[in-house]
Amino acid sequence: MLQHVNRPSALRSIRTFPLERFYAAGRHGAAAAADEADIDAARKWLAKLDPETIPRSICDVTFSRSSGPGGQNVNKVSSKATLRVPTASLLPLLPALLRPYILSNRYHAAKNQDLVIQADDSRKQTDNVNACFRKLTELITEAGRDAVPGETSAEQSKRVEILQKAEAAGRRRMKEFQSKKKSARRGVGGGRGDD
Image (cartoon, rainbow, N blue to C red; front, side, top):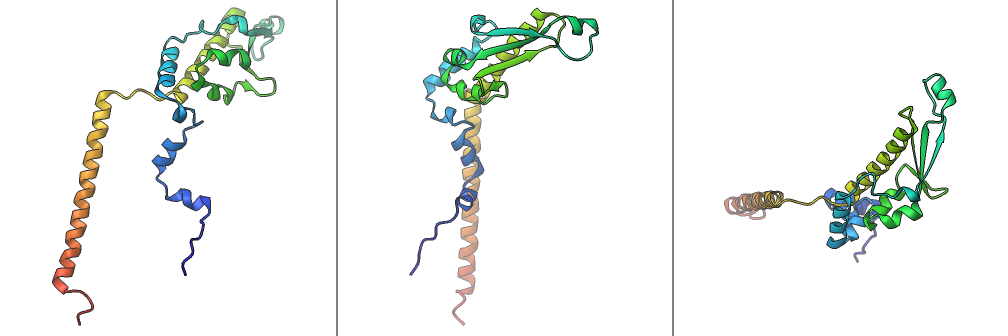
């Protein structure tokens, strides 16, 4: 009597095609579950994004002494800017698709649920504050690249369709070739059990 033996999940996942696993899972699964309207809204929002999109009223900027070379300027002036953005205030302003990516970013401080961004590139406070907001904008843009799939152009879709048809035709030719080869073997020898 034959029994079905359950294989460990590690062995089952080996048999699936890599691209199936890649497209089925998604990085956070957000893009897979999103509908076209959410994706389109996120694309439009990201197209309008600039450093002034995020209101500065929800942010807290503090200054401290920066490290490194600079002589008396470093020792006397607090030019390093630290930007704290509470995620509770920021996330409602962002499209829903971007939220998991923001929360998993390296700037996210899980302890107090803030995004903490620092800049001490310049000797001027205003330049460092602007650099912090620029980094925040880049962070959101990067989350958008990860979360929102790119639009496929008509020519790209047509190219993919042509490649799929060529692959199917090649597979069909190979099957016909194998079939003819096997039938030729059967026809010439008359089979193996005829001795």
